[in-house]
Length: 212
Image (cartoon, rainbow, N blue to C red; front, side, top):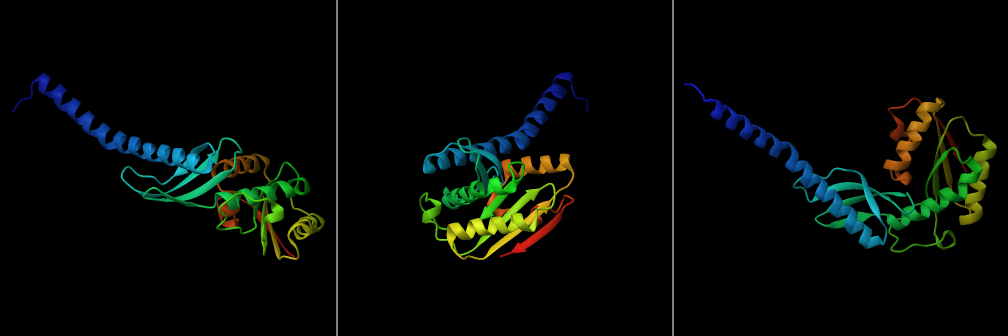
């Protein structure tokens, strides 16, 4: 059996159409899910979000999405389940205020990633309004921090929130190109309060721990 030139062209065309549908249609639908999530979250929180990463599929109603505010550059994680969004937007705003409080102590070149455990907040609050029972501070640095610096961090948090337990972990990445790359990636693609030592498992670093 011989195929005519016209039949061959038609067969190739149909094959390309099928391949395109298999590859591109799911990608378009996934992108649509991400765009919808960003738009709906922007409306819910009166912010302007862009998606930085997600597990959205073409036909899934349950997925994870990470968005960054174009206004503040803060990154937030949300679980999406059939149009319902579960995340800690307001709690992360509190953590960000703590980061800003501590930034002058650790140096502007380093990345502060605090968690003062304010889960369940339904509105923005000030640091003075925060009811904090304990605090964890993770810091991405190029060189070891001193005991004096760690003590100053703890003293600042205790002055703000009272005599709470404070855990400080410094992740020391002492190669400058790697440090800058990790700092940029973490700052743009991860909710900072969720960062811990396991987040840096693919990079060469050592850890300092302080408890107060």
